[in-house]
Length: 150
Image (tube, rainbow, N blue to C red):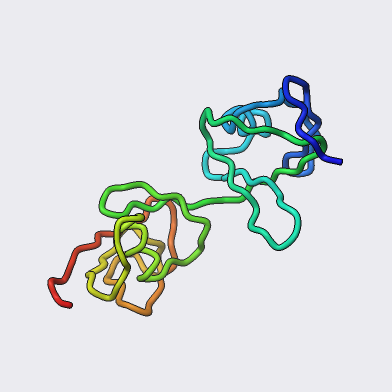
């Protein structure tokens, strides 16, 4: 039975390597313990049909269960109107860029002009139209602006 043991050391697995960690700990401490590079994000494996839980690289408290498994995966940093976003994608769609721009503050639609630059060689710069997608790379830049049309 996997139960959290507060105030004890917990045996955990990060990228298939066994570690002992204080319990509770922080996301920042788990990243350091596992030697997770900046370009990767750490996830807690979740059983069943649920999405694995991302672990923030900060001082948020993380309660551990004995023999719990974590893994890291590469993320790509893109800038949307100057705001940095980490995405776990190799390509990004028009709608995904608009959703990053809006955050939780609006409804995505086809009423935006999306331009990009600093992309990979096959699509270094251009305009992204509704229904299209482009390959992305670290520090690729997107500029989203309203078209004034509805």
